Length: 138
Image 1 (cartoon, helix red, strand yellow):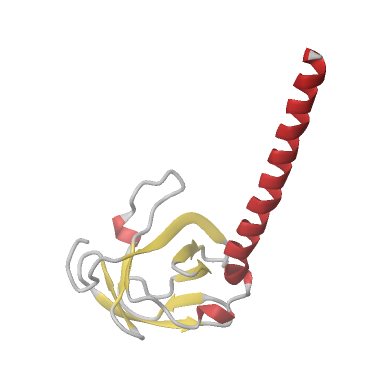
Image 2: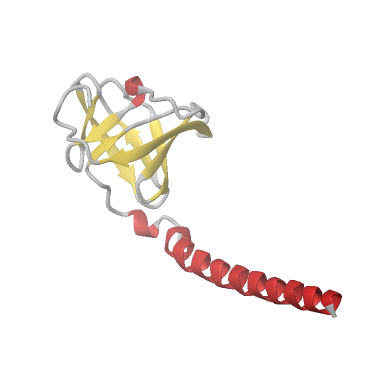
């Protein structure tokens, strides 16, 4: 009797885990679906500071930038320059200032990854922060 009871508990736990996994995967699917709809949803940029960090999570202030408006950015030290953003590719290109010629690839709604000179994504991530891009040394 005891063994039968234990197996029945094991089967119940397995069913519960399976149901939880199905539910969790459904929730995950719903949470991820809007983000995976190509770059069409990335047509507007969030103004603010994009605080870059390396693959170990250490801040890289010299790589950070702030979007002031639809064509102007500031750097960590307060320098300014221009940028363009291609919503179809998700690529932001700095056209003047300290970062002239450098590019960033938008991979999520509020996250850019730094591109190398060949256009490959590097280990550096630049998530959006609510800091004021008009202030120095965020």
